Every structure is written in structure tokens, then in C-alpha cells.
Image 1 (cartoon, rainbow, N blue to C red):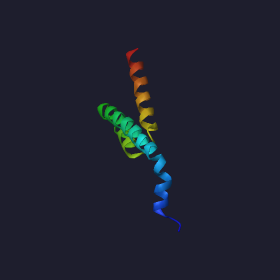
Image 2 (cartoon, one colour):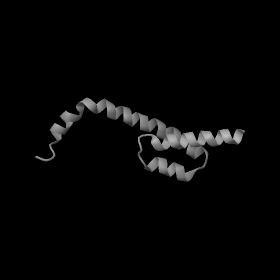
Image 3 (tube, rainbow, N blue to C red):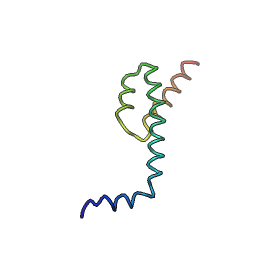
Image 4 (cartoon, rainbow, N blue to C red):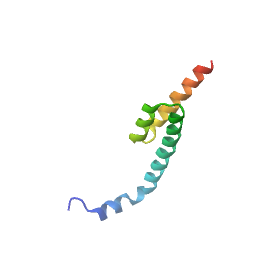
Length: 75
């Protein structure tokens, strides 16, 4: 059989904790970045962060960019 789901679950069982950690990691960064994008009225960033699943990479890029822009405005 090509796709035996019982064997697939048995092989993936040791890595279930990794999937849970990745989901929590992505969710945390996504929520923070979505909140910041909404607060800053940046619709394009909000849509991109909401649509694309990048395991937290895109939200982290947005948050770092936002921090750098704020620091530049304060100077």
C-alpha cells in the first residue's frame, strides 16, 4: 500500500511534540505581528502575515522592521 495512515502515525508519533512547539511558535509570533500591523494601519502586512504560514519568519521580520522604524523616528 502506498499510503498506510496507521504506519504514518506510528512513524510520526515521536515528533508530535515538535509539531506542537512549531504551532505555538508560529501562533505567538503571528498574533503579535498581526496586532502591531493592525495598530499601525498596515493592511498589506496584515494580509500577508495572516495568509502565509512561514513558521514565524515573516512576523519576526515585520516586528524587527517595525522596531527599527520606531527607533529611527525617535532619533
